[in-house]
Image: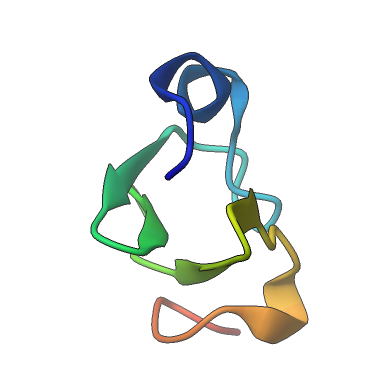
Amino acid sequence: MVDDNLVKMLICPACKSNVRLEGEQIVCAKCGRRYPIRNGVPVMLVDEAEGGDKE
Protein backbone atom coordinates (compact mmCIF):
# COMPACT_ATOMS: atom_id res chain seq x y z
CA MET A 1 0.00 0.00 0.00
CA VAL A 2 1.20 3.50 -0.84
CA ASP A 3 1.15 6.13 1.89
CA ASP A 4 -1.45 8.90 1.34
CA ASN A 5 1.17 11.57 2.11
CA LEU A 6 3.35 10.25 -0.70
CA VAL A 7 0.46 10.34 -3.18
CA LYS A 8 -0.20 13.98 -2.24
CA MET A 9 3.40 14.85 -3.23
CA LEU A 10 3.26 13.13 -6.62
CA ILE A 11 2.29 14.72 -9.94
CA CYS A 12 1.78 13.22 -13.37
CA PRO A 13 5.12 13.31 -15.22
CA ALA A 14 3.31 13.79 -18.54
CA CYS A 15 1.03 16.77 -17.83
CA LYS A 16 2.15 17.90 -14.34
CA SER A 17 -1.36 17.54 -12.83
CA ASN A 18 -2.45 16.08 -9.51
CA VAL A 19 -2.85 12.33 -9.14
CA ARG A 20 -4.95 10.09 -6.91
CA LEU A 21 -4.71 6.52 -5.69
CA GLU A 22 -7.19 4.05 -7.20
CA GLY A 23 -6.64 0.50 -6.05
CA GLU A 24 -3.18 -0.54 -7.19
CA GLN A 25 -2.69 2.38 -9.59
CA ILE A 26 -1.91 6.08 -9.45
CA VAL A 27 -4.33 7.95 -11.75
CA CYS A 28 -3.87 11.43 -13.22
CA ALA A 29 -6.83 13.73 -12.65
CA LYS A 30 -6.28 15.59 -15.94
CA CYS A 31 -4.97 13.27 -18.65
CA GLY A 32 -6.20 9.99 -17.16
CA ARG A 33 -2.92 8.09 -17.38
CA ARG A 34 -2.74 5.19 -14.96
CA TYR A 35 0.64 4.46 -13.38
CA PRO A 36 1.28 1.04 -11.83
CA ILE A 37 2.36 0.37 -8.27
CA ARG A 38 4.91 -2.43 -7.98
CA ASN A 39 5.96 -3.82 -4.62
CA GLY A 40 4.46 -0.76 -2.93
CA VAL A 41 6.37 1.70 -5.15
CA PRO A 42 4.60 3.96 -7.67
CA VAL A 43 6.19 3.65 -11.11
CA MET A 44 5.78 7.22 -12.37
CA LEU A 45 7.17 6.72 -15.87
CA VAL A 46 5.18 7.84 -18.92
CA ASP A 47 6.30 4.73 -20.82
CA GLU A 48 4.81 2.52 -18.08
CA ALA A 49 1.44 4.34 -17.99
CA GLU A 50 -1.80 2.98 -19.40
CA GLY A 51 -4.47 5.05 -21.10
CA GLY A 52 -4.71 8.78 -21.05
CA ASP A 53 -4.34 11.40 -23.74
CA LYS A 54 -1.08 10.16 -25.19
CA GLU A 55 0.16 12.48 -27.91
